[in-house]
Structure formats: C-alpha cells, structure tokens
Amino acid sequence: MTIEQLYDDFALLDDWEDRYRYLIELGRDLEPLPDAERTAANKVSGCASQVWLWTRVEDGAEPRLRLVGDSDAHIVKGLVAVVLALFDGKTASEIAAIDAEAAFRRLDLAAHLSPQRSNGLRSMVTRIKADARRVAPGETHP
Image 1 (cartoon, rainbow, N blue to C red):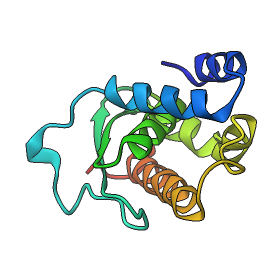
Image 2 (spheres, rainbow, N blue to C red):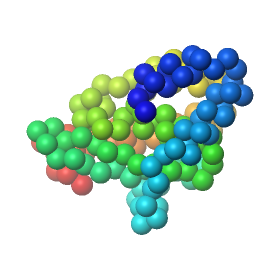
Image 3 (tube, one colour):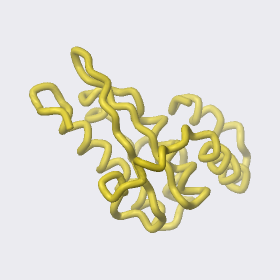
C-alpha cells in the first residue's frame, strides 16, 4: 500500500464511518509483528494505545528502513498502516523530506481523530524519523 493509493481510496469513501472501517481493514492487513519484537525498545511512547514499531535496515549505498508495526487498538492499528504507507522502504534522506503532517491533512485525519490519536500519530512519525537519522549515511547502524 502506498500513500497515493490511500489518498485515492479515501477520496472514494463518502463519509467518515466508511473511512474508519477502511482504517480498521488496513490494520487487519498489516504484516504481523513477531512476538519477539513486542519489546519496550520497540514500543512507541506518547501513544494512548500500545503501539510497537520494529525498524529493520536494508543495507545499500543508502540504507532503506523496513518497518513493521502493530497496536492493541483496531483504529490505531489502521493508523500504523497509514504511517507505514508513508515511510516503509524509504531511505533516511527520503524519510527526512516527508511532510507527514501534510499527508495527514490531505487525508483529513486531524479533523476526525481524537487529540490522543493525533498525538500518537506524531509520536510514530517522531520515532521513525529518529530511526532514520540513526542510519543516515555517516552514522552507525543500530
């Protein structure tokens, strides 16, 4: 799933009840997070629900981050899928250049999420961008 596909799919849905159902579906379709990766180190702080993000690094001229995420809440798990659509498989420099807030505005998420869920989205983005900075060229890999 790409962010462009999400934009297109959201545009086809007329109301937010349908969009919430779609977010839940997206969460159900996520790659499962291995139980061994449900660790304190992978837990995202700042989320009201439990959220885990596991970052793997694919080596290359500029490493790519591969992300797997999960949550204990259905809608939040769908929001994890949105975040992964934005960032998964990107290089550190691509991740640094992504304006996640603009993407969330385009999806109209801020107007339809609770303040806690919006804060959780920002916490996921902060975590991914920090992971990207750690693997940027010239940095040591985790």
